[in-house]
Image (cartoon, rainbow over all chains, first blue to last red; front, side, top):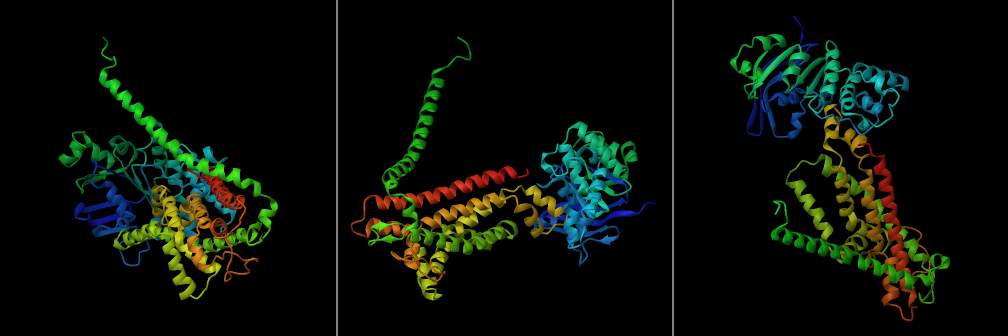
Length: 255
Length: 291
């Protein structure tokens, strides 16, 4: 059986007095693409944002329970958030490349995490090429690496947003509806590249789009009203869901 | 009759529309009348005294002749020292308020204090500067005391301009940085500041214009009506353009008519040149902006 990359145990989360997650237990297998589906407001994005602890910035968030990433408790004392976020990359709904050149975007995370360590131009070039190759963007942009990243098309921007996470060698990539701002063709391209990353990274991807979950993920988790309903191999979940709620949702009776 | 034909109600609406538009246009035109008049009169009456010598000679004959060199250089001193004091404080405070401060009662109290500071009349600042810098800190009547007084007075301009330009940087950039594990300072230094520098500079230049023109605060704290020599350091007194204008306009007998206009023209030109520079700079930086 595959190793577990992310495991939550009885995870509860409150925004102020509103409880958004109820005793969530999920085990995400290492190196696989797991999709997280469920109707709006079911807590998919909240769960995602708890795994890199970026939710805490809001200030009024309270959590109980535990999350282990690669076997380590992320709520343990002494966990440095910068380390956690280096290990657990996040991709957003809207592509948000930084207002820097393509090259500087790819190197941004690497530069902030390497401190004073000297890295030669050639090594940086290699990092940039490797990252952009992995997201299938290298051939399109290799001649204009100094161009501003915000001038790229949305599809290219989103690919870049994935590429900039890779030079620091994360183990987990969280993606919050990464294709919802893209047209169908770009969505297809993104799905292809995400599919290509499986094996190298554990990918947890939130999606509204059931067809996408079905064609682009190996495991699928269904959430409803803050509760984890069921998790299993994608094909099984779609063909023979255990719960009537899951069946109703994937058949489009609500959501 | 077509169902789309104009009715009396439509006619009434059109009339009101025209009236409102015309009224607002007239107000806008009214707005520029004083500017045009001031500039027109200044140029017409002040231009005759302008010459290279007017800018490079010291005032002579009880300030009724000669140039304005000492006042011009004095203003440069005062403005420079004021900027050195206020820009670092103002920018740092704005960065703190915009990027670090939690939204609590203390932050709100600080914001209220800044707004109030901007509303304090300049004569009150003058008296504060006299008490604080001239007497309490013992700087005496000096460039240092005058500049610090002006710095306190213009701090809100820098803070507000800086804070606004920081907040104009889209939040998504910060989110992206934080999610990659960047600290606040890394985010500010690498993304936020480089993209708000044009707005910050605009604030600084606005502050320069304001500092160059203020009279009351420096009259009490370090500007002299007449000095035949240039200041040698920040603890010296100095002449200044704004005070010189006040003095030659109201305090000195037998001043040639054109002289005050000439002084005013030079002062306003300084400010306009600085404003134009700031606009040019802002356009340049905005074109360089990368989103």
